[in-house]
Length: 108
Image (tube, rainbow, N blue to C red):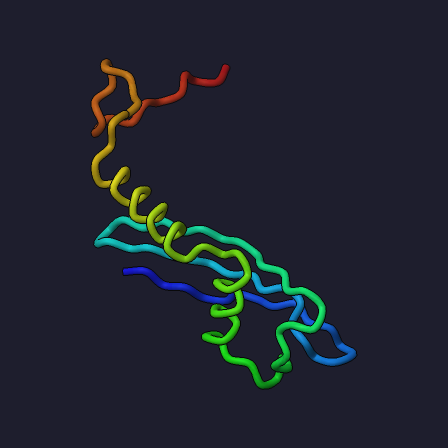
């Protein structure tokens, strides 16, 4: 499942127009999840819906129209989830079993 959300906006107090949106895209597949966070700035004169009247869907649409590549981000998250589900590398030391907890030497 892919979820997009606007976490915060920065707006001018003079006219209430949003200048920057802080967004996050979260992908989940069972116990696996990954997310990407970013910001998107808007030029002078756009958008034109005041902060008090705007919806999250409208701000997301502005982000996607202003350089946030929705399809690429979702594909990257899907690849990250796939890598988590199918690791090609692991770490550890062979003399300690995963169920064993290494102990620190006593402090003298």
